[in-house]
Image 1 (cartoon, rainbow, N blue to C red):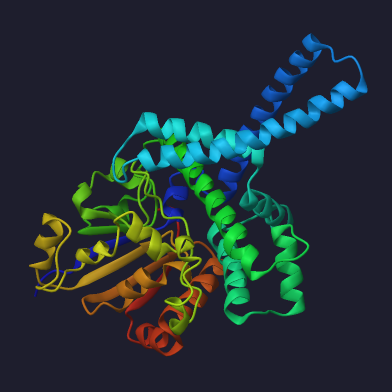
Image 2 (cartoon, rainbow, N blue to C red; image 1 turned 135 degrees about the vertical axis):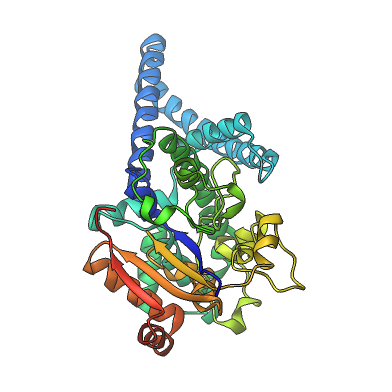
Length: 390
């Protein structure tokens, strides 16, 4: 009998276990700190200019303020154009450090001058709950807008909530398609670039401590939902054994989006929000579903690289270890594929406390369905294990 192989599936909890500050709230603090520094520097510059110019009367001050507003509006339009041009010059999948630095600098300028819709929204959520999940909140807004377009109307409460979220007195289909969607998408892309910048800096300062050797050694394949390369740096597993589902730092292909929010019969009819969705972003970045090569492709299917072709030609079953992933339904396509694959004979899911276990089981119920989940637990295919000092 062939020895079972081991597939390791990693989520953000893996990076957190290695003392990295990779929560979305950490990123929000980073954004706020930098914006405050920019604002302080700009205030100092303007104060110095004001003192030197010594505007004589109120009328001149008013005219100067009006002129500044016009200039700022022009700057924002120019910045939008420049950001798009520099972003287009980035080759997906390659490391253009100089171009990426320039792009981030433009994003910071845009953020200071124009703000960011999603940051404003996340800030409200964070102040209320002291926690925010980017993708869940983005999905809630996008789903509400989609329903408005698909159904033509929504309840009065939902309409008032949506107007409040968007900072508008009223909305209509034409405004959503022409103005709101482009703004939301552009602002989300700004955050994606700055998130990559933040995580690059964060991982550069990571301590070289192997805290999870018991599960990270002797693995035959790794599927990670993290953008970082912490696993590669610490545990020296060959890169060809590792697949980053959502892209990786330095390649400027980060997938930051949502799952499908429409019913099957509406997916191909209403594509206004496709760019927000993970499947679309994965296609754009050339990521696709090649992670499936880890467990073996069918003979008539292409393999993404030599290592996966090697795995395909090996027979045998797999044990799966899932660490640090909440099993959020936005990743249901890939997670569902892993958990229902015929070669997977055992799945061990690590959790940190009762609350996280309850959340994991709730998510698995959505992904697998109640009956299949119960069946796999009864057959001792799925196991839950609490995290301890590993």
